Length: 427
Image (cartoon, rainbow, N blue to C red):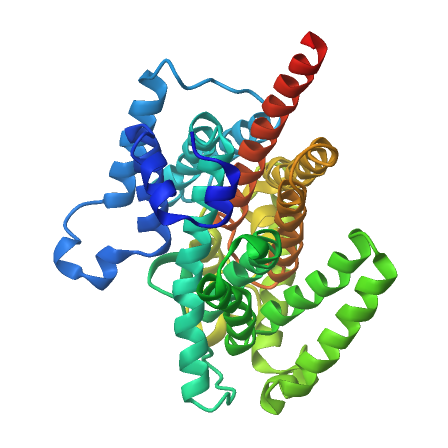
């Protein structure tokens, strides 16, 4: 059995030896994450002949549910997932355009399946560490590319910013949200494992949070910077040594603002007055009206664009182009009504509470990193929640992967804590 020192030090030989002993369904789950985040099928188009991500999910599901070694673990977060699926189903059935709604219904089911795969398969600290490392390295691939591109243009602000890979990270705003989620995790990862690394690994992994931070700035998105500001405000207020952390964070923020491109800072001077802001305010106002007219189930899942075009307000869409609402909470309220809103943000709140419970479990007898990871997951959620006010990312991986990681870690720490207590009682 691999030791924590081996995987904290990223001992490739020891990690590979342990990975060879892991079941196929764990490999398939990792394969799904690789194809979801890295998207090699988009880079090497000759292999883009199969729905790889779906095949990995199906394989992992069959393997884990047929294996006697996996444990079906219920927790209170699952009911919010099921509630959200039920709300989306009802909203789709009574939607103005049910055909359009049901074409995307598989997306919601996908996150329910992914959640169960996480809590059934990611059942050890080693597996959790590998999954987390895989997501961070995939994000590092994007952040280092974005940081290099930003440097090549002379760290000059460009309106189109920096985009990620194809898929859900195909534009700057979405890439920025992913970086907001990864930033606190990458800092905790470096802080917790730094003493285990040699010089080369220290240099390599220290660039992870640095390039992530550069990418957040390089996106040129106001919502991303507001999300970063929320992280900078909440993180020191909820950590230990509060006064010291607030002082250090203030110095960091001042330094960051000082090196930001002036053109990027000037975008905040026109916030609320430029065409982009005015258009979004129009969408939000209309979204509230949609919700008032359909308060329980909304206008229908995935129905925003066709409904807006069929029932236009006095202010039409920007250049007659069908755009989304550019706000996740407005989208949830308008499309899914109060029922969907309760379950969607119920997942958010329950995930936060689960991470707080994980921190309490790991406070006494585990390595500090296992207490810090759930803290970082919560801080990442703060960044997501803040940034998502200004963009529609309702059923993107951001929330659902974060919730799945949190539930899996809680089950791992709870199980280990119970085993540890049982052994002490035996003695």
